[in-house]
Length: 546
Ligand code: RAM
Image (cartoon, rainbow, N blue to C red):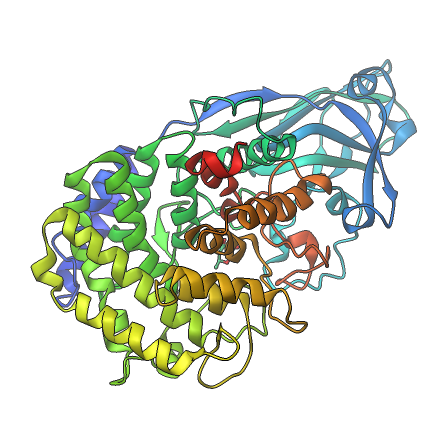
């Protein structure tokens, strides 16, 4: 273990636990943290070089109206004077996460002055084409990957300090001397991932589009698997429980590197709030810490499901036993936010918890909240059964029954066959999906609801692959296999057709420019929660592999 962790963070943890008598997990945190650190994977580094010089063409038929057009092999850069070019865009041919370096040398006369460049790295063509300023985004401008570099002495080799996630890099010359010529060479990126094994290829009889989707899904997951499951290697570069849950599903059916899941489960437990509730996100650098007050309702509960899945995938009872108290504690979120009539008190819940489900702003989340709560209770009870702890959560079966009954009474419209909240008539994908996953709708009712969705003009559609994942699962759970395959092929296949070699954080087939951050270059284009075709395709071969 690195020295800082052993003395610094562990010291801090014991200090915190000693000084906060009411810390729910006082005695366990330091051990959990140690176990997380013991599972920290080594990163594999691979050298990647640019493939082509490209130009970005304005094309209204292309994704975000930008198309990368190859103009020359990247090697031609080595022999041309960069002063003549002043600006180029390189295509590495694939999404890469790592450290970028380049070298400069004179082509003849000695260098008499410094050089200055601006490097702009992009996961998609628009990022190296659209101006970043004036910046309209709502997250830090510094997430955008543009860096100004001054080279004081030539020749030299420079490695940019920040880790980057990109396929394209634009290089602009900002300062140079008229008294000598130079060129750029040895441009490369040391790409990192903690993935060490690659799964068997799909049978050759699998639909070509499913194979392409699978490949992009594996790439996405591989890029996000660093020393934690990151949500996106460009942004936010951190562990979120909801992303972890889906990444772990993908990993279980592909790379099978279960220690990364174990590490993340322990880290989240070690860094949870003193009340015992989980914080939704952990930032690893410079020392692992949770984002304070980041209480996200579904994510706290999905932790339990991820723990149950981990136990099923590995049989590692020690970890599951260690972390069972955390899972047990999260159940209070449901108990404490439920009305006497068995419905979740959505208004009360929202006072303390961020209720997410999707980035679609207009989404009314009351019915989905009820469905997810029941889903989490069922899965948590299964975890208790696997561990023989049913007695500790003996109230759950009755609670599930009560909540199911209440939802069917107050949220199901028998005439339309659709579920809605009690305070809004909005019909959304999210409501139907979570009623199905929660087992509140029967498979038959689920089929009816999901089929009806397509006929409703103003239905609230998913805005992210995150919610779309649950849509595919809901289709499968109610036996709509053909529709599940079709939906997966159309949605993720739509990204592939628009040029994706890794999958995106946000995708609305009808709006390439959708961004919850008010600036689409800030979206992540290699995003964890988008990787789950990997799981579907391999878990349900009879549906997706023929
Ligand atoms: C964003 C990220 C992340 C997600 C949260 C809720 O910051 O996209 O993946 O889990 O939102």
